[in-house]
Amino acid sequence: MTLHLVRLPIDLQALATFAVANGASDDDGGYALHLALRRRFGEAGPQPFRLFADGPEPAYLLGYASDPVALTEMADIPAVEPILDAVFTAAPQWRAMPATWRAGARYGFSVRTRPVVRFGARRKAERADTDAAKAGENWWARAGEVDAWIAARTRPDGDPDLTRDAAYAAWLATRLSGSATLEAGVELVQFRRVRARRSAHGRPGRSRVDGPEALLTGTLIVADAQAFAHLLARGVGRHAAFGYGMLLLSPPARGG
Image (cartoon, rainbow, N blue to C red; front, top):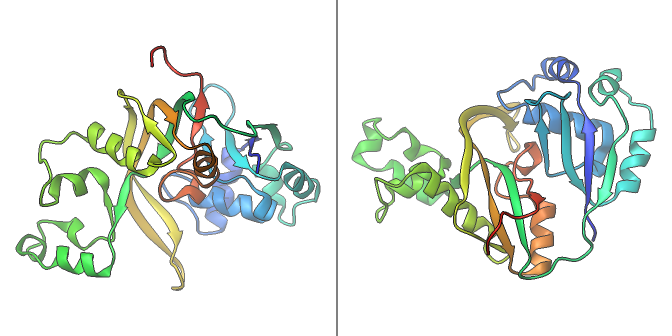
Protein backbone atom coordinates (compact mmCIF):
# COMPACT_ATOMS: atom_id res chain seq x y z
CA MET A 1 0.00 0.00 0.00
CA THR A 2 1.42 3.38 -1.07
CA LEU A 3 0.30 6.36 0.93
CA HIS A 4 -0.36 9.72 -0.67
CA LEU A 5 0.09 13.10 0.93
CA VAL A 6 -3.11 15.09 0.44
CA ARG A 7 -3.56 18.85 0.67
CA LEU A 8 -7.02 20.40 1.07
CA PRO A 9 -7.74 24.12 1.51
CA ILE A 10 -10.09 24.83 4.42
CA ASP A 11 -12.38 27.81 4.97
CA LEU A 12 -12.30 28.29 8.74
CA GLN A 13 -15.41 30.45 8.91
CA ALA A 14 -17.43 27.85 7.00
CA LEU A 15 -16.00 25.11 9.21
CA ALA A 16 -17.09 27.05 12.32
CA THR A 17 -20.60 27.43 10.87
CA PHE A 18 -20.70 23.69 10.14
CA ALA A 19 -19.48 22.93 13.68
CA VAL A 20 -22.18 25.04 15.32
CA ALA A 21 -24.90 23.54 13.11
CA ASN A 22 -23.81 20.02 14.07
CA GLY A 23 -23.03 20.55 17.76
CA ALA A 24 -19.36 19.87 17.08
CA SER A 25 -17.64 23.02 18.34
CA ASP A 26 -14.57 22.50 20.55
CA ASP A 27 -11.09 23.86 21.22
CA ASP A 28 -9.14 21.94 18.59
CA GLY A 29 -11.69 21.79 15.75
CA GLY A 30 -10.91 18.10 15.37
CA TYR A 31 -14.41 16.72 15.72
CA ALA A 32 -15.93 19.18 13.25
CA LEU A 33 -13.22 18.54 10.68
CA HIS A 34 -13.50 14.77 11.17
CA LEU A 35 -17.26 14.99 10.65
CA ALA A 36 -16.96 17.24 7.59
CA LEU A 37 -14.37 14.97 5.97
CA ARG A 38 -16.52 11.88 6.50
CA ARG A 39 -19.65 13.52 5.11
CA ARG A 40 -17.84 14.93 2.09
CA PHE A 41 -15.40 12.15 1.17
CA GLY A 42 -16.57 9.08 3.09
CA GLU A 43 -13.95 6.43 3.82
CA ALA A 44 -11.73 7.90 1.07
CA GLY A 45 -11.04 11.00 3.18
CA PRO A 46 -7.52 11.54 4.52
CA GLN A 47 -6.65 10.10 7.94
CA PRO A 48 -4.57 10.85 9.89
CA PHE A 49 -4.57 14.56 9.11
CA ARG A 50 -3.42 17.87 10.51
CA LEU A 51 -4.93 21.33 10.18
CA PHE A 52 -2.65 24.30 9.53
CA ALA A 53 -4.46 27.50 10.45
CA ASP A 54 -1.91 29.77 12.13
CA GLY A 55 0.35 30.78 9.24
CA PRO A 56 0.17 33.75 6.85
CA GLU A 57 -1.45 31.70 4.08
CA PRO A 58 -5.09 30.52 4.07
CA ALA A 59 -5.85 27.48 6.24
CA TYR A 60 -5.29 24.05 4.79
CA LEU A 61 -5.22 20.41 5.80
CA LEU A 62 -2.50 17.85 5.17
CA GLY A 63 -3.35 14.18 5.49
CA TYR A 64 -2.53 10.71 4.29
CA ALA A 65 -4.81 8.75 1.96
CA SER A 66 -4.29 5.26 0.59
CA ASP A 67 -6.57 5.64 -2.46
CA PRO A 68 -6.30 9.07 -4.11
CA VAL A 69 -8.41 7.93 -7.05
CA ALA A 70 -11.35 7.19 -4.74
CA LEU A 71 -10.75 10.53 -3.00
CA THR A 72 -10.89 12.35 -6.34
CA GLU A 73 -14.06 10.48 -7.31
CA MET A 74 -15.75 11.52 -4.08
CA ALA A 75 -14.60 15.11 -4.59
CA ASP A 76 -16.19 15.12 -8.07
CA ILE A 77 -19.61 14.30 -6.62
CA PRO A 78 -21.59 17.42 -5.66
CA ALA A 79 -21.87 17.73 -1.88
CA VAL A 80 -25.28 16.85 -0.44
CA GLU A 81 -24.80 19.60 2.15
CA PRO A 82 -23.90 22.92 0.46
CA ILE A 83 -21.94 24.07 3.51
CA LEU A 84 -19.39 21.33 2.79
CA ASP A 85 -18.49 22.94 -0.54
CA ALA A 86 -17.85 26.11 1.45
CA VAL A 87 -15.62 24.26 3.93
CA PHE A 88 -13.55 22.51 1.25
CA THR A 89 -12.98 25.31 -1.22
CA ALA A 90 -11.02 23.40 -3.87
CA ALA A 91 -10.34 19.88 -5.05
CA PRO A 92 -7.76 17.85 -3.12
CA GLN A 93 -4.19 17.80 -4.40
CA TRP A 94 -1.98 14.81 -3.72
CA ARG A 95 1.49 13.36 -4.21
CA ALA A 96 2.65 9.81 -3.68
CA MET A 97 4.82 8.99 -0.69
CA PRO A 98 7.67 6.48 -1.15
CA ALA A 99 6.44 3.00 -2.11
CA THR A 100 9.03 1.43 0.18
CA TRP A 101 11.00 2.57 3.20
CA ARG A 102 14.57 1.67 4.11
CA ALA A 103 15.54 0.48 7.57
CA GLY A 104 18.19 2.85 8.86
CA ALA A 105 16.93 5.86 6.92
CA ARG A 106 16.82 9.14 8.89
CA TYR A 107 14.01 11.68 8.65
CA GLY A 108 13.13 14.86 10.40
CA PHE A 109 9.60 14.81 11.75
CA SER A 110 6.86 16.99 13.15
CA VAL A 111 3.81 15.51 14.86
CA ARG A 112 0.85 17.06 16.64
CA THR A 113 -0.12 14.67 19.43
CA ARG A 114 -2.42 13.98 22.35
CA PRO A 115 0.23 12.50 24.71
CA VAL A 116 -2.06 10.50 26.96
CA VAL A 117 -2.14 7.03 28.48
CA ARG A 118 -5.29 5.04 29.16
CA PHE A 119 -6.25 2.80 32.06
CA GLY A 120 -8.72 -0.05 32.06
CA ALA A 121 -11.55 -0.42 34.56
CA ARG A 122 -9.44 -2.38 37.08
CA ARG A 123 -6.54 0.08 37.03
CA LYS A 124 -8.93 3.05 37.28
CA ALA A 125 -10.51 1.48 40.35
CA GLU A 126 -7.09 0.94 41.93
CA ARG A 127 -6.06 4.54 41.27
CA ALA A 128 -9.36 5.90 42.57
CA ASP A 129 -9.17 3.81 45.74
CA THR A 130 -6.50 5.95 47.39
CA ASP A 131 -6.79 8.46 50.19
CA ALA A 132 -5.71 11.32 47.92
CA ALA A 133 -8.22 10.42 45.25
CA LYS A 134 -11.05 10.06 47.74
CA ALA A 135 -10.19 13.45 49.18
CA GLY A 136 -10.37 14.94 45.71
CA GLU A 137 -6.67 15.85 45.64
CA ASN A 138 -5.87 13.65 42.65
CA TRP A 139 -8.70 14.39 40.22
CA TRP A 140 -6.90 12.40 37.51
CA ALA A 141 -7.01 9.16 39.52
CA ARG A 142 -10.54 8.50 38.30
CA ALA A 143 -9.82 9.43 34.69
CA GLY A 144 -9.52 6.77 32.02
CA GLU A 145 -7.24 8.98 29.91
CA VAL A 146 -4.39 10.80 31.66
CA ASP A 147 -1.67 13.21 30.57
CA ALA A 148 1.47 11.09 29.99
CA TRP A 149 3.52 13.56 32.04
CA ILE A 150 1.24 13.22 35.08
CA ALA A 151 1.08 9.42 34.68
CA ALA A 152 4.89 9.10 34.51
CA ARG A 153 5.51 11.31 37.56
CA THR A 154 2.90 9.72 39.80
CA ARG A 155 3.40 6.01 39.22
CA PRO A 156 5.11 4.10 42.06
CA ASP A 157 8.56 4.27 40.42
CA GLY A 158 7.99 7.70 38.88
CA ASP A 159 10.26 10.73 39.14
CA PRO A 160 8.35 13.73 40.54
CA ASP A 161 10.95 16.05 38.95
CA LEU A 162 10.50 14.62 35.45
CA THR A 163 10.06 17.42 32.91
CA ARG A 164 7.15 17.55 30.52
CA ASP A 165 9.57 17.55 27.57
CA ALA A 166 11.25 14.34 28.73
CA ALA A 167 7.94 12.63 29.54
CA TYR A 168 6.50 13.35 26.10
CA ALA A 169 9.70 12.27 24.34
CA ALA A 170 9.54 8.95 26.22
CA TRP A 171 5.83 8.62 25.39
CA LEU A 172 6.58 9.16 21.71
CA ALA A 173 9.48 6.69 21.73
CA THR A 174 7.15 4.03 23.13
CA ARG A 175 4.56 4.65 20.41
CA LEU A 176 7.22 4.42 17.69
CA SER A 177 8.78 1.28 19.18
CA GLY A 178 9.24 -1.44 16.59
CA SER A 179 8.78 1.04 13.74
CA ALA A 180 11.37 3.73 14.38
CA THR A 181 13.76 5.03 17.02
CA LEU A 182 14.28 8.62 18.10
CA GLU A 183 17.54 10.48 18.11
CA ALA A 184 18.29 12.62 21.12
CA GLY A 185 16.92 16.12 21.04
CA VAL A 186 13.16 15.68 20.61
CA GLU A 187 11.72 19.16 21.12
CA LEU A 188 8.38 20.15 22.62
CA VAL A 189 7.60 23.09 20.34
CA GLN A 190 4.09 23.88 21.54
CA PHE A 191 1.89 22.77 24.42
CA ARG A 192 -1.63 23.59 25.52
CA ARG A 193 -4.57 21.91 27.21
CA VAL A 194 -7.68 21.55 25.09
CA ARG A 195 -11.27 20.47 25.58
CA ALA A 196 -12.49 18.40 22.66
CA ARG A 197 -15.69 16.64 21.60
CA ARG A 198 -15.58 12.96 20.83
CA SER A 199 -18.07 10.17 20.16
CA ALA A 200 -19.68 8.82 23.31
CA HIS A 201 -18.99 5.18 22.32
CA GLY A 202 -22.50 3.83 22.23
CA ARG A 203 -24.01 6.36 24.62
CA PRO A 204 -26.34 9.09 23.34
CA GLY A 205 -24.72 12.38 22.40
CA ARG A 206 -21.04 13.26 22.50
CA SER A 207 -18.56 13.44 25.33
CA ARG A 208 -16.07 16.17 26.18
CA VAL A 209 -12.46 15.16 26.70
CA ASP A 210 -9.93 17.45 28.40
CA GLY A 211 -6.28 16.75 27.78
CA PRO A 212 -2.87 17.86 26.56
CA GLU A 213 -1.94 18.83 23.03
CA ALA A 214 1.77 18.77 22.16
CA LEU A 215 3.67 19.54 18.97
CA LEU A 216 6.86 17.47 18.91
CA THR A 217 9.74 17.69 16.45
CA GLY A 218 13.00 15.82 16.03
CA THR A 219 14.77 13.18 14.00
CA LEU A 220 13.83 9.52 13.72
CA ILE A 221 15.49 6.43 12.25
CA VAL A 222 13.39 3.79 10.50
CA ALA A 223 13.75 0.47 12.34
CA ASP A 224 11.36 -1.75 10.39
CA ALA A 225 10.23 -0.65 6.93
CA GLN A 226 6.86 -2.40 6.91
CA ALA A 227 5.99 -1.42 10.47
CA PHE A 228 6.95 2.18 9.70
CA ALA A 229 4.61 2.24 6.69
CA HIS A 230 1.75 1.00 8.89
CA LEU A 231 2.59 3.62 11.53
CA LEU A 232 2.32 6.43 8.99
CA ALA A 233 -1.03 5.10 7.80
CA ARG A 234 -2.63 4.77 11.24
CA GLY A 235 -1.02 7.73 13.02
CA VAL A 236 0.74 8.08 16.36
CA GLY A 237 -1.21 7.69 19.56
CA ARG A 238 -4.88 8.32 20.23
CA HIS A 239 -7.29 10.73 18.48
CA ALA A 240 -5.74 10.10 15.04
CA ALA A 241 -9.20 10.52 13.47
CA PHE A 242 -9.43 14.04 14.90
CA GLY A 243 -6.33 15.81 13.64
CA TYR A 244 -3.59 14.23 15.74
CA GLY A 245 -0.82 11.72 15.17
CA MET A 246 0.14 12.53 11.58
CA LEU A 247 3.90 12.15 11.16
CA LEU A 248 5.09 14.80 8.73
CA LEU A 249 8.53 13.91 7.38
CA SER A 250 11.32 16.16 6.17
CA PRO A 251 15.07 16.03 5.54
CA PRO A 252 16.86 15.28 8.82
CA ALA A 253 19.03 17.62 10.82
CA ARG A 254 22.76 17.24 10.39
CA GLY A 255 24.47 14.48 12.29
CA GLY A 256 23.76 10.82 12.83
